[in-house]
Each structure stands twice: as C-alpha cells, then as structure tokens.
Amino acid sequence: MSLRDEQATLRAMAHPVRLRILSLLTGAALTAADISRELGLTHANASYHLRTLLAGGLIVPDGEERIRGGIAKRYRYDAARDRERDRESGRAVNADVQRPLFATVANELIRRTAEADWSVGGTMTDAELWVDPEVFRDVRDRIARASRDLHDAARAPRTPGAVRTSTTIAMFKMVDP
Image (cartoon, rainbow, N blue to C red):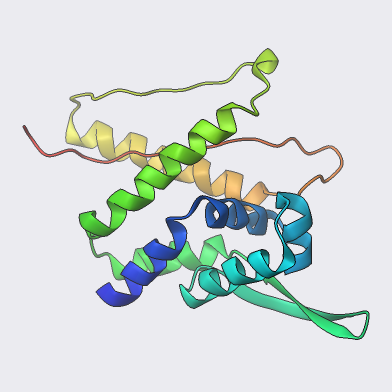
C-alpha cells in the first residue's frame, strides 16, 4: 500500500461515524439501510460513509439483494484481509497520519462510556511503563491475538444472546524523552 493509499485509508477511519460503521460491519455484512436504522442516520448519510470506507479500502462488497424494485448492496469489514495486508507490508505507519485516528478513537471512547453498563464490571489500563523489549513484544502479541479473537467472534447487531461490548486497544513503543 502506498503512502497516499495509507493516508486515504486512515483519513476514512478518522471519523466517529465511520468507526462505528466499521464495528458494525465486523460482525455482519450490512446495507446502507441496515446501518441507517442501527445508527439513526439518514440513508443518504449512511451511503456516503459506506462509499468513503469503500474508497479507502476499509470494507469490501458482500453481495446484493433486490428490495422494492431496487438493489441494495451489502458491505463487510474483512479483518483477516487487513491482518494479512499489515503482515505483508511490514512497513511502519506514518505518525502524522496515525495521530488523527487515535484522537478520533479517544473521542469515540468518551461516547461509548456514556452507554456503559458498569454493573457487570470492566477493565482498563492506562499507563506509561518502562519494560524490557521482550516483555513489550510478548504482551503486544498476546493483546493482538485477543483482538483477533474478538473480531473473529463478532456477530450482527442485536443478535440474540450476544452482548454489545466496547474494546479499545492502543499499545505502542514510545520515544525516549
């Protein structure tokens, strides 16, 4: 992926509504109408955000269906494809492109905490820690595996028996002050 493509991809992600759409599309292939109902958006707005995500290479088409004389396109987020692409590229992400994404995710976390069910508990770690490089790599890899497990287990919105969760993970090596 070229730097220009990478910038377009991260720019597409750096919007709170598109982050929510990506989350929904992790568990199921959905249409613009499905997304507009779930997120309370207009159909036109949901379609616009889907087109932006598609242009950024973040989602893939997943079929079509006839609905009242029209054709509704389904889209999904393919986490396995992105993991493979990341593994193949092996290139560091441009920090100036990544920072706006992290800021958007931080704001999204604020929105989600307003909808939290604290009665069942939760967990959070926020710290600047100094650890051995081997420990960092080991923990980072275990967290990445847990993240993959969650993505692979994602279900469609409101699937009976499934619980809605918020998972935000940001782990990176920092430069020395």
